[in-house]
Image 1: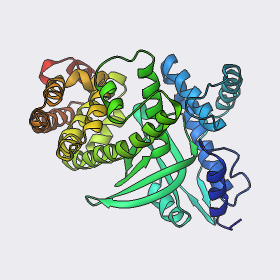
Image 2: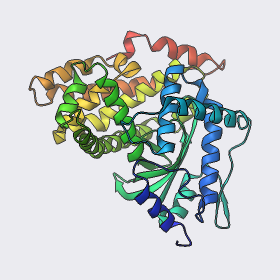
Image 3: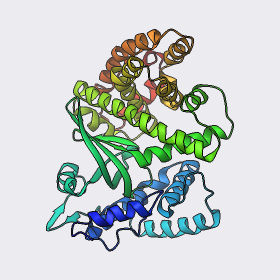
Length: 377
């Protein structure tokens, strides 16, 4: 085994087909770093995991168990074992709810767990990628995984992450922090499988059926996994486009936007603000690029995932999608993206200017605006 842990990681990848075996690196030289990342994941989950709705909490716990246990996607999860594991995990969390996040030990250094730039500069030579940031509703998110490749897109560093060795309960397939985009292919693959499983339970008509047909999905296990592999490749690019759109939106909105999100206490207010910026990012970059490239499968899938607040705020997209399905070659989608870029920039600027005194003033205003017709397009 190499002194820097590379051989241990390569061994773990060869011998764990379906995920980050939590025992694979216990004896590696990088084990203290891995242990620290795991501890921070547990602390985040202890503080925020049970804030989820019961249904989402149980689904995410099941998938975390599947990942930790190396259970293949699509294979049944033993319910009794999951129940026992959840009891143990929640007991661990009860000891960590008041704990502070720990620093990351690396050789002779001690790194702040949110100093992503420093950590990745040190880990790049080991072909590892580290991510940390604040997700929805203030939940810290952490991961440590294999760095597959890096590239520069529109002046932004994009890091493609493969197998993961540590992660928290809510594994976001992509995120941007400090000018660096991480696309987590393993997290994306698992999320895609969950989306497909949900669709298979009822198999409704619509954009998801069209997307799966475009990807050649079939219920046969071998064909299903082949289709998911194709989806991971294509939808990784869609994620990159969205994050590049976030970069452009960030340059428009400035640093005050993140400060606003951090100050919001209402879940609906935060969902509204995030949906508005997501639409701005997608209208600036994602949607025009997908249409320009003729990426039919990704367009179907993008519309299939237009749900909740995002769907509620942007009904014009459904009309434009229907026109595209009818053969207009994307004209309505491009027109909608152009109109959306202007509309959502204005909306985000209004959100930024919302009064924040008293402390819940922004929450109250954004909750009201989330149902206001003037913020719909």
